Image 1 (cartoon, rainbow, N blue to C red):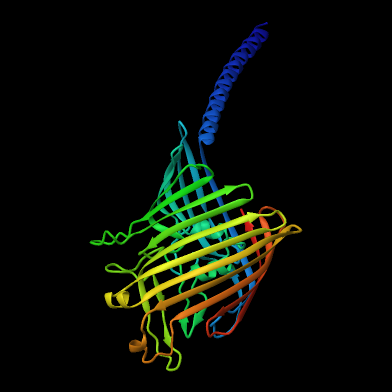
Image 2 (cartoon, rainbow, N blue to C red):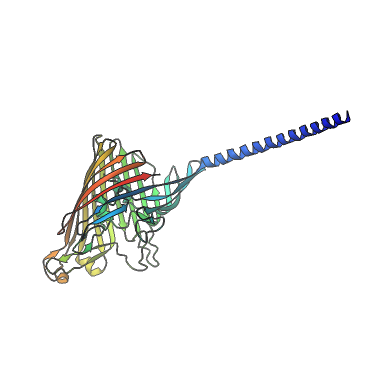
Length: 410
């Protein structure tokens, strides 16, 4: 009986211990659930995204004025490859904080940046607030030219094959040994910038841009601009103005004027040259597109004026450029046929006989580029493309470039 009683006591003690353990486990579970709910609530208010695009192509490249043809595996045929982080936090009452840290890369070599010397986060490096008032951000962000340029080019963000971007944003091509100077200065992104985007009003979204030059003793050396975009049904159009005195992403000039554009007239007979350097580039742009469903039509017009470095040059010569671009995108199967043509004229007016030793002077350069391509989409994230581009600069031979590539977004 004692043995039985002892066993009963043990069982009752074990039962009480088990009940206590269950109560503790239940309390722990409830605390864990509460923590999870709190964490879920926090996650619902804050989000961070990792994303990017990898774009690479193989081809044969020759721009007008190049000495020879180059066979390549290269980066960013249809879009500049990039990666990075974007995040936002809900602060309540419709107010959000946001940030972006994104950088370019070259998948053909694994190098960072668009080129050697490009900064790590040259695509985006900014933080700001958004709400019913619109959005304001501080840091490195878009330039006024970026969204309008890409929106009204059939090839979008292709800096390798889109004629509009080739002329206005790259140094590809040459004339009489002089490298082509992109006619829209200041890059597609600005550092040390305050950017404000309005709410959408009557179909228009307008953005204001101001970049501080950060040069001691020279508070007037800054970049500023504005753009506006409109979209309603099949019609879209946009415009921008920007005034550039500061190079990007970094400006190496620590005092005085920076060279933001250059153009070199030459004597056709002797080959003598005289370079005009600009400390200021003002650009006006209008563009539009109309979607007919069976095809989409594009058109743009750029006009740039320059202020030359040196009072003598600025008073004696007048340097301007203009670019017109027309194009179309035609749906075909799971992709689109793309076509774009651009013509740019860079012209310096003035008497160059004294500096070039004669009157047979070439002070106006015309460039024509046409590209035809097909972009096939396997999915929303993955597409392949092929492009043929023909390029011609004044007194240089025609040049043909071809490329076949693949792009994946993540």
